[in-house]
Length: 161
Image (cartoon, rainbow, N blue to C red; front, side):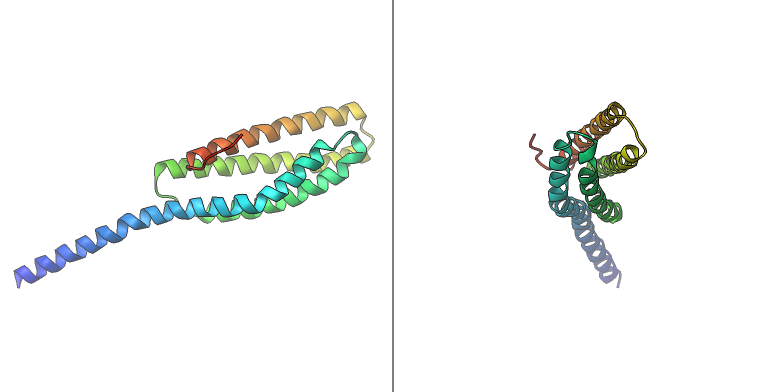
């Protein structure tokens, strides 16, 4: 009787050990899979916004870029929601996930300000004021992009550029 219960206990412990190790990997893999999926979904939106932003030569060009910023924000919101619900196990993946969520937040804040430029142009701001605000926003977007690249590297993705 004792021998049977010890064997059953050992088998239970062994099966728990076999199940627990892949679950950790699967959880981290789930975070990476989410990042990969949403990077692919938001990349075209980011590209469109980047082109619209580069095309801004005067305050008359801002509404088109602000529209692209709004669409990019919508994609980022979905990305943030999906990434927030993904559970990480390893410290490295947890840190990368937190850093990526912070980068998404930085992007979102800058894009909100970008959309605010439309109101700024409509309220009679000077071209210089609009240009200064635009440069500040673009600097924030560059900083968010650097943070995103660092987070992706932390998550084990090869970052180009």
